[in-house]
Length: 216
Image (cartoon, rainbow, N blue to C red; front, side, top):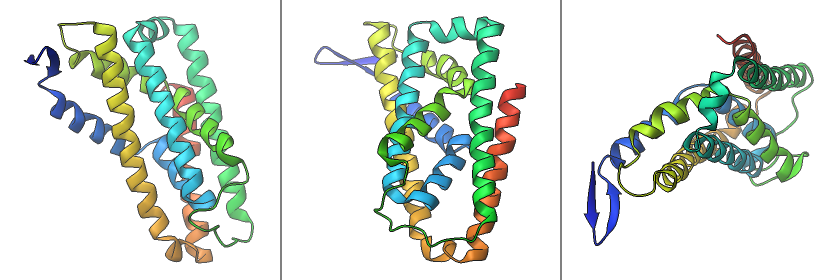
């Protein structure tokens, strides 16, 4: 249902859509584990670059969904399997690297505004690749977005607009989450806590990678 304000179609269920996408963003998963890792190892600058990459991935998924490409991908077992396995390998590699880093002597974390050695584009690519490598994002796109697309006006434009809102809502949650993680740097900078968080994050990424690759 929509309401017409001076000729502009406004989805009346937009508040419900905002709540839905916010709750989806809060669900524990690969992106949340990745944001924790990036914040602890590279600071807020690295986390923000990763968030930007993740948001771009959501835009790509939502655009593909609105064009019907996600449905084609999910309908092709071979294509879906390739994307799923590649995404799983990416997550497994991140988990293994995080676990390997936890074995060494924990070094002090960089300043909150500092960068990561991989730079902005390295962190951005990591966020983008992690999102695109997760076919579940495509499932969310084709199952959530169509329920809120207005029946009046250009469907493609409406779908893209909702995709932008989805990306923005998700980015806002991750910005809040990484800020909270960064505020606790004094606590996590303790060697025992630091190593424990790295191990926990690495294990989560590793298990998620295996789960995604196996199609569970």
